[in-house]
Image (tube, rainbow, N blue to C red; front, side, top):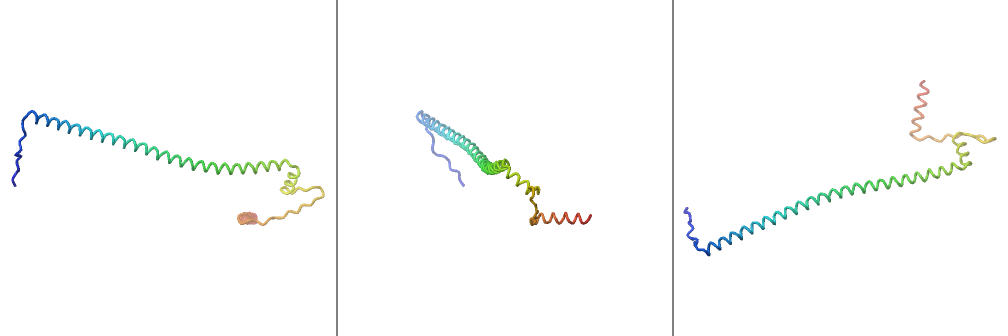
Length: 141
């Protein structure tokens, strides 16, 4: 293989030197502009990445807060229902006839001349098991 030699010689004139210097200056300005554009692009990319990450975290936080809000609203509606029921119970307890009926039914009290016959209600499965356990423990003694 033969090595090709450069047979073109540069002219050593003032005009050629001036044009070559202008060309080098243009190349340096082009490289500077490209670097500046790359730096601006990288800076913008970093800023958008940081802002995007912040937005993502804020969206997750907002979703958690919305879940908590829904949970709190359901709990509040349950508490309001309970409060309404308790207010109704309090208003019933202010009625003397209701309190008398409640005491007679719960504690087997009776009015004068009235006879009370307690009726046992059928036990549920869990209370039947408890009754069986208590009966077996009393018979074992």
